[in-house]
Image (cartoon, rainbow, N blue to C red):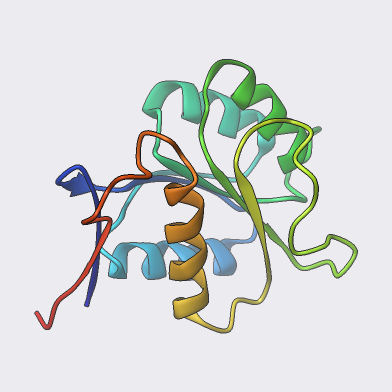
Length: 146
């Protein structure tokens, strides 16, 4: 089992996905890594409110969402006041795996459907290590046999 911790506590994740099956699968995967999904929402508008309320360590957000704004637009709004790393999810091949970061917040893009939990874990570890407050964390992930 993988246990993901920051400074001795579970990594807190806001999950933003409008497809119920995909959202459920990601929630199960995130929880199986012993991270904690603090809230799961389906729109960009709801993600803005949820991020302000819960102040997660990480946001996992689909790009195309219910509501009037995309995940990218929601991320820009969220990160005007909060600096939260974001892993974008997309089923589209139009988005590259990594783009220039003119918005000045850490992000990665993962293609759906996700075929490897190891890949997701690698992306989580990379994006959190890019955050100055977490960059010196030696115990970001533990692998245990329990």
